[in-house]
Length: 156
Image (cartoon, rainbow, N blue to C red; front, side, top):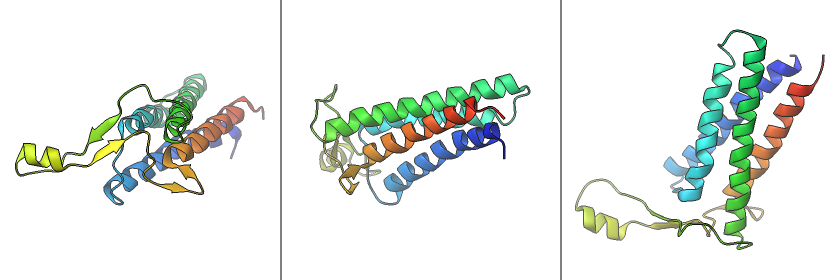
């Protein structure tokens, strides 16, 4: 596989895998996202669309541009992940109050709202080896963006 095709495949596969992990942790494992978690998702959604378009648009220049834009979106998510991880580790303060109430369905709205858990941005819900989900997003996203851009600049 040539470098461009690998870059294009990675530009699609990486945000798809990271979003599958994020949505799986939310809907299967019950780890509800805070506000900054949602901030990290939006650039991945954009990267998925851009990378998917790179498989269907005509012209190599357009394809390369879309892959580069997808890599930029992935890097933006990684940068937000660095910021979020720093907030979780209390290296710096977040820029919002950053609490989210999870809305359980059905029943009395006020009662459900009062009983819903509060999800804070400055408390990691899960970690492995001291690295939170935001930290893993930062590592994989920034590393992946660098790899994609390196593959895009590689000559045959």
